[in-house]
Length: 255
Image (cartoon, rainbow, N blue to C red; front, side, top):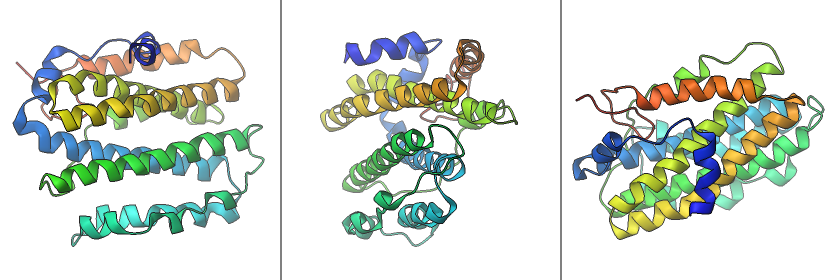
């Protein structure tokens, strides 16, 4: 675990404060923690899908990603949802990613498509894993308001290409790195099942962070450390700031 976390800690501007950990480990926060985590996995997949559609695939392939995402989005956004039926469905028939055709918008569109499709598959799988745990514990999925973490980061994205995609990829790296760091922080304080689950997520989330960062560096073709530092300071500020709403990526609770 330490081998996985060392580059994460080197990348992030700070560790998660103990005040967040103390809040997160309280039994009364478990429902919010799991539901928000479930939402985060879906949002991560949706973000990657949008990136692939905009930058990496031919327009004729766009409907394939929409078809792939539809069961997940239908479950989340409909009022009369059935978690048991959703989890029991055959999800392989909607995966048509082997039919995707890369475009020529970027010199490395094929690499973007390959890395993002792998990420999407894993995020959808993690969504299902969290939902399965919730269902077994009698926790109903609900639409809770997302925190302001990702929205605030995205508000600083530059509006001209390729600067836009570079910034989005850097932000993706920070979100994935923070997720990985928080899995490690919270795992020792949870029951055995959840501790094992969150520890198991560390490897894939650590790779997601590296994939985002590598793509940003490759597309830029120049040193982007200054831009990484820019977002590092913003992300650190969000993590260290007081936050009245508890979420997986929220700041510290007010004293």
